[in-house]
Amino acid sequence: MGDVEKGKKLFVQRCASCHNADQGAKHKQGPNLFGMFGNKTGQAPGYTYTDANKNRGIVWDTTTLDTYLENPKKFIPGTKMIFAGLKKKSDRDNLVAYLESRK
Image 1 (cartoon, one colour):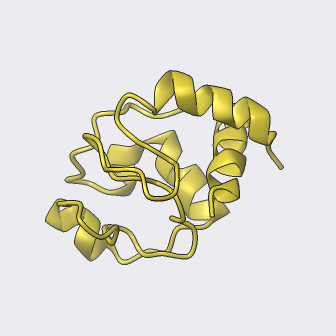
Image 2 (cartoon, rainbow, N blue to C red; image 1 turned 180 degrees about the vertical axis):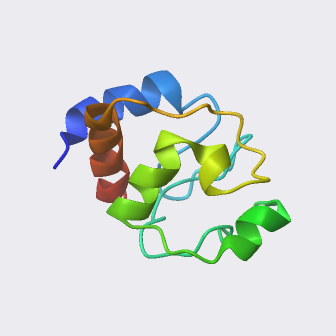
């Protein structure tokens, strides 16, 4: 189980340049991540996804997000996300805990 506060700091440092995680916030280069848990990939209203994201068909949960964050391009080949991933399990756990709290 990750630490939400550490995850928030990590989000600000590594993700916030491309993503929001606040309810009602606009999409940036990447989609707003508020409320992503329980939703399928490529489904945030108003964001233009690649076919790879739209057709992946997995549901975001702690396991799928952890796997994705380790290596996004391996998990969803064809994604336009340029982020290389988080190699440290503790960083992924903290970021997942923060994003899961955003619902």
